[in-house]
Length: 243
Ligand code: SAM
Image 1 (cartoon, protein in one colour):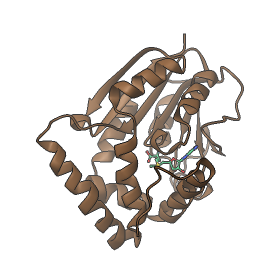
Image 2 (cartoon, helix red, strand yellow; image 1 turned 90 degrees about the vertical axis):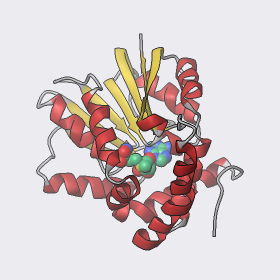
Image 3 (cartoon, rainbow, N blue to C red; image 1 turned 135 degrees about the vertical axis):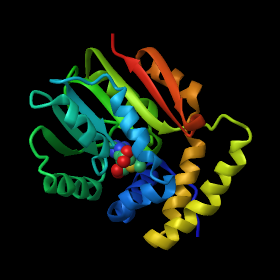
Image 4 (cartoon, rainbow, N blue to C red; image 1 turned 45 degrees about the horizontal axis):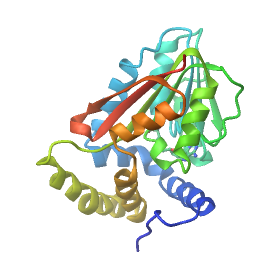
């Protein structure tokens, strides 16, 4: 079976996205490693290493899931900083919080169930807002970007790590084969769930490509919006400032 999210109404999409992540939460980390051959770890490390985050910063990691990005940020903000992990899915947050608690990471980390479209924080609360492999899943992306802008302090910045449009023409067929043939099979074999991985490939294709996302960030009020491609555009990092 197969579901496309293109035509489903808004409330229904939110529910479907919820189900996808509830069904994959336990296997989520293993699947990331399998699907990307471990490369997602490199992208995430690069994302945080080049984020400009510093000791004492107060950071919000949206769609933080099981906390990969938050753990890396946490190392950098130190005792005087803090990281809030926000995610709409309680299952992902629970897996993340348990894993971090096992590693002794408790202080300076907050886990909050929230919708990125309506953040439960006052204006100007954070130095940095990150969202990694999350914006793609949000129903109203423009609204989420506006919310990210709102909760940033003046001089604060937002970073979006997301799948994007692959650039080299020769690589596209390889990438499509991996997305539509390999991923659903890996999903079926290792997570007993081909649909969620079919959804993954589709959601990547529908996500606004590099220049369009940059324009959306400008529309949301961000200044100095830029992006960098990773791995030939499999992913891109977009950045923008609140000025
Ligand atoms: N950032 C983590 C990482 O890089 O491993 C998790 C990414 S995971 C692919 C996407 C996450 O987005 C899921 O945990 C899902 O629950 C969350 N999500 C989807 N829609 C959301 C929304 N509207 N608000 C907040 N989180 C959302």
